Length: 280
Length: 164
Image (cartoon, rainbow over all chains, first blue to last red; front, side, top):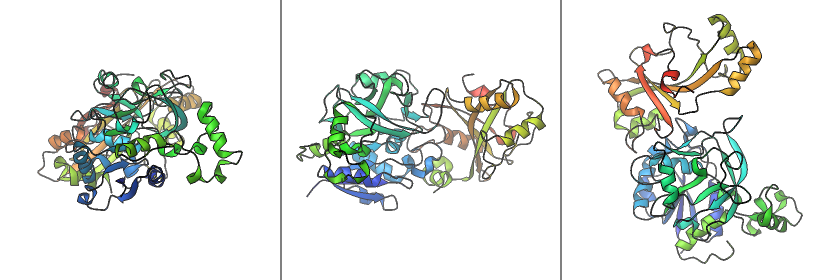
């Protein structure tokens, strides 16, 4: 029996279906788990994903109300027991608001409003993230320095901390496994490569143990090569073109397509459970 | 589920919270016209509020009428380094030729059951500290201030932010 992964769906979450598809592609058994069920029923799962969307309509702050939910207490308890927990976009905001990342006790981070020159608010685009040295289980199939094209889509994605030295310390501790980068692979200090003004170009933060990851880009939207933007070049662009074979993306059959760059995040989870991960 | 419901269910300081209202607070600084002209401009613009789902009241002096009810506590939450609204400033310059500074922040109006120490409860709800304590302001990115809602200062954002 495959490891069971709960996709925790708070009201307003809207990325649960594609997240389930990505988990299924790597051999895991996902279950979309609605917030109306008892928190105790969440405990038996092997791993957890809090997907993207707009939980509770982003009231107060993105992720702030979901972080107060009883289900989040269960996630905290299971993470302390070592269960993998992945928060994507709004899910990352929930994990930050709950203190699951960086997990040093208290609430040490915020995912604040985007800072972009000459514009404000929600912003969506394809960016590159660079894999950094870490022992985060979700990144175990990727090598430091590797570049992944992934889409971002958020209004509050700027990692920041009350203590100005905290994020730098997390970088040095290997708890920022993904950072925004230019297409050439250097860290992205400015818009648009750094799409939100995130400090130290941080795109994802893990806890010290490496079993909890809060990631702002959407790996589930890049689970197939054919899903990549036409703007993505390099070897991933070639894979996209090969996957589509000249057929418009809308006509491609997603399940049969070669893996995209985002699938490696989910495959890292499968590897953690000892599943074969060829092709991810 | 509303923020009020979540706060009442999950936060000890909100057990006796009866009402939680959100105001978007703008402050305009610079060479401003009279209150009537300001009202006309603000109501005409799309940068400040949506008249189909929001109401807007202009306060020209600290004594101007407030939206708050007696006994409410006001918690101001300011995005650190992000209160300025350049688009609104550009619109104002286009309409009037005047260069002004527009700042925006959120103000929460909290109403508690009688007998509750409203000021203390508002303080406990204001700053996010842990899963079970605080909600309205994440101190990693935001600053806050608290006042009796009937005495909301004017200006207020400028006294809390870093004076951008």
